[in-house]
Image (cartoon, one colour):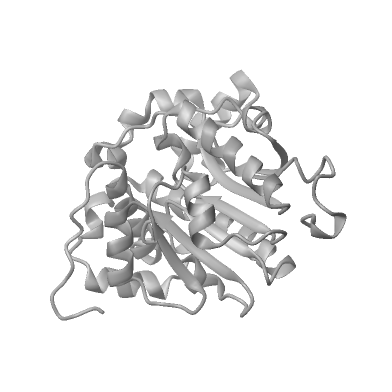
Length: 289
């Protein structure tokens, strides 16, 4: 429960990056009013946390990009929930995200937030509780561990969302995680939808130039060459979204130049379906729409 004393976010490295996205949501009305982003639950968290979001206010491109990304994740998650109101949503690296509060959840859907133990402890102290939303503290890339712990039922459609996660993973760790997720879904005869964002190799190499990330001492490690790299791990691409195009004039210019030179996006959000479902290992009635 939240008391009168404010909680102190004793975080460092990758866990501390959750403060960047929280700052984006807390400052949305002031810095990016045109996006119309409203998050009352984030305001509740901000009021209870010993944290000044203005620490990141100078990095307007990153904060705007975080909001553009969050709005897109909201949309594709809402689409899944509407089609599968009895499904399961697994959020990897949830931080202090409040997507269930923004979307509203049907009574038959379960939502699991997964993150480092210190982050889950902070979530449980600050994020307003909701029915059917649970947490699991541990390594989100250890698919076998969390799949067993959360009770992933055979045949249940699953959306696995990873927002602001992949670029902080070692490349081999990221590839193993995604391949294992597709394999676990096939083993449980469940249709799996993967929703994630990923940095291009150039963005990953230059991650140290990002002023907000630099403040946390986290590092970008995995640059994904494009959707085909993820498809090779057992997925089929459904949709991509160009975050840079809506993240301010400089980001738009850099993104357009990179796209002109390479034919690829500098920073992508994407939706994939685990391709085991396409190969007929899952009964047709369980395929995702």
